[in-house]
Image 1: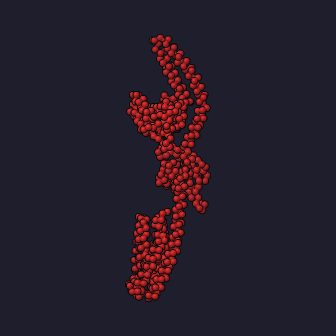
Image 2: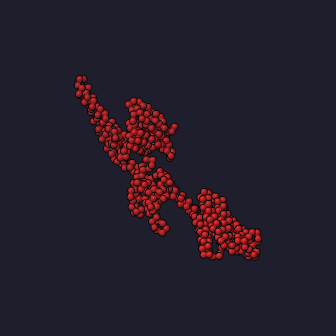
Image 3: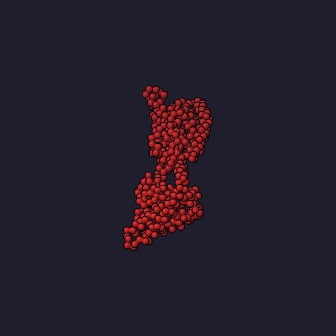
Length: 528
């Protein structure tokens, strides 16, 4: 803790201590007046009441000033006011015979705690001067005592002044040592707090604590990054509000490590690994709970990709052989139909129609087999730098030629951005994505493409966005599954093939969608 902060930090009990002292003096005055004791005259009691009132007003003023400013000047003003007030109590209650001289001792200790060693020295000197004035003044005839009576003789005044001065000096020395120890304790406590804060903020896991009433009481920096919630937004909420997937949970001590889904505020769905444990106070009593969690989304995605690759590896060879076995008879059928059609009479409309149907369906089946072969074995090809600006200019021109589509392609691509991959395969990937987005857009809509460097600088992110009908959550989860389609005439292999090609390039693909708001497909590829 900086020196200024230590010295200007007002002890938490200072305000209450000041009020308690004033209340005690007020009670003493009231008891003296009620019992009719002759310790103080009526005039002295009135003066003491006035000083108590002034003390209460000063206490309120000090509280307002210290809340407004932590400057040491505020405490100097506070100590000066207290010195004047204590001097008034001593002067109005008998001077050297006053019982309120001990207030100077308390004042010196308080000065040491608030302003450190220099504060103790300043308060000691000020107390000696103030006490000397109110005692020596009447004795030397500088001014009369409060009641106008003769004060102590010079010898008595000197004895009182020296005695109090020695007491003030002794207390100042002790208070100075106390202040040094308190400041060292504050410094050590602050350093421990800083170490704790740095540890909590720099751990690679999200960490939060929950109080006894079930509300979040702390939230570290990694928790902010993972969840997208600022600590000021998360603190005060219940755990179920922030993580609805947890639902009602048992006692934290009974919880094993669990995996939960979490929807960020920006719409991204994460898979979190979380463990809950009981938080205990030094006495061993339950004081809430602590939750530690990590973002396992990439790990879960890799596990799913591995399982899918294993499945595809098992069926790939079988699928390729089966596709070739289907394609060979298809070629024979197609040739036979062509020969039969050539021999048909020109006026036989029914046979001509049937032959066209056979040719069309044969071609469709051939395309399906071709797509399936591409999906099962998307050859890596030769990788080279691919200019994204030129690639999407070409795709935009292709899209513009489709008059029935009526969709515009709007691009925002950083100049000179190049992906490392096979140009033909990447062209097919993005044409598939752009075409799908165009089919989702209303007439005269706009498909938007954004491309930028990722933070790692070794990857590119290409986003294809539409504002079409979007997908339901259950459909979004199956977006890249083979043979899953939402189109009446789709094969369900387009996006599955896109994913296979992207993964063969060492990249990854993800989709996000909201019903009636549109879809965004994000492709990550190695940067050339």
